[in-house]
Image (tube, rainbow, N blue to C red):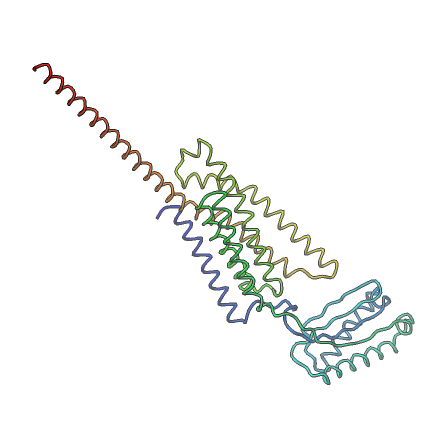
Length: 357
């Protein structure tokens, strides 16, 4: 096994193992790790005016009071978050499990009683007299993202076919095949790692798959574009196929790494902006980081290795065809020379016969 084939074998083997483990984790644990936005859930909200939201001590006391009251009443609080606008602040508490309306109303009454008691005993008049706090509960119905996975799979397959056709026409068939394999590999490996690492994912999982596929097309387009330019130079024409691919791929490392770092920075900045503005993008950010790392590895290691295998085969077939054409032309020329020689010999023989006569 050659060095390039060994590298390709190891890369595919590692990716295959990770994909299989990810699929097993996905199956055993019942899908991706829920990010809180994909399943139906019960939410209890406690909303207050700016007096409560501005004063951090009031806010912390109210949050602690609500959590304690709900737990004492028998509710299973799965998580909570605080949302603030210009005129009010809202605590959202997500309850684990299923509850009937009567039980939920009991929790609401318990919160209202606890908050009223807290306000009555509050010495600060701004909190005890002028502030308003009200409690409500609702069921939040979310879309089941699994219903849309087949739609995404079909769309991804179409994109892979189009990418293959584009690379095959613009560059060559070997690059088109390498792009198709790399695209499928990147999507499967990115989703497998999300499942394996238990990164919270839900409604955005299809977006992550699409991002992994499109960024793969972008990076591979850059790498193969450089290869096409390099292969036109006399220096690369004299090199063996594998060495030419490896040398060109090494030249693409720096710009690919710079592009990946810029993309990672953009993702992190978006995540920070989301946290600051109250729209949590942490799950999407982590999934996107995984996709970028997979794309970078694939475009610099996997895709060139796959293309090198096909380039060797295509170059060997081309050389064989050229040799066959050369031998055929040489044989044709030899037969032509032989025919001309025979014709001249025949003419000389005829001339000799005429002289004798």
